[in-house]
Image (tube, rainbow, N blue to C red; front, top):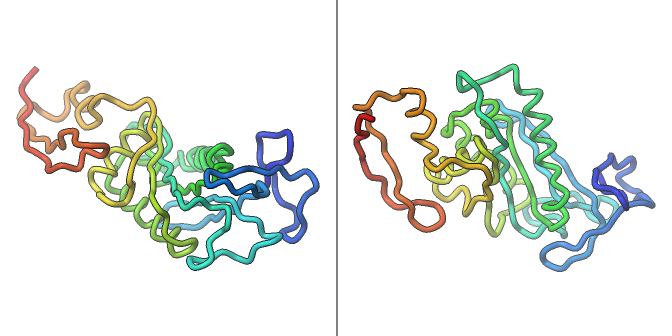
Amino acid sequence: MYLPTHSHALKPLANLKVLPEDVAQTTTSTGATVNFIVRIETATINRGIYQSALLHDPTVETAPSPFSPPAAWNRRLIGIHGVGCPGGWYTQAGIPVVLDLLRELLLNVRRLGQGYALYGNTLQNPSTSCNPFLAGETAMMGKEHFIKTYGVPDYSLSMGQSGGAYTSLQIIDAFPGVFDGALIELTFPDALSHRPLRYGWPPPHALFYRRPPHGLHGRSAGRRQRLSEP
């Protein structure tokens, strides 16, 4: 796909060998000025639908590899974790909607134009499943596939809003090293206890394992804390 001049929406690239006359250009965060052409990959990973996107000009570049990544990639990777959280914690029928949302978030013209690579999976999106361990495992497998396809990023970020924000935070806590930071919006003051306690679950005698804030990721050792009755 490519970005036409005077437009904010990507459109299909009709011929991989011919540069469209109306293709726009962009200057990445590393100062490279390139044609705004985006390579999109779709695959199945961990039973979910995986997609990735980054700048790559097939009219002048060979097919990318881990040893020859796209020239416009700034070596930064963003994992997309979407929004929401369904009742029942898992919604199979919502996947078509989640896939549309994933594509919308993936084709982030601003981030792509800066040279970032983005990837996501329907099982990383809490609108499909609110299970942070499933999302973390899927994110880790997707990043591994990305590395095998394009090479190792200098650093990786997690991005999400609302349910996607606390999914980002939970993955960073539960899977240290997968992401180096988070770009989150509309999150909760305490993702693990805010909604459960509001609806009377778990019972007051239950135990939580909480990680007190420490630096950017809260990766200090967890501590056991008994919840008191309201």
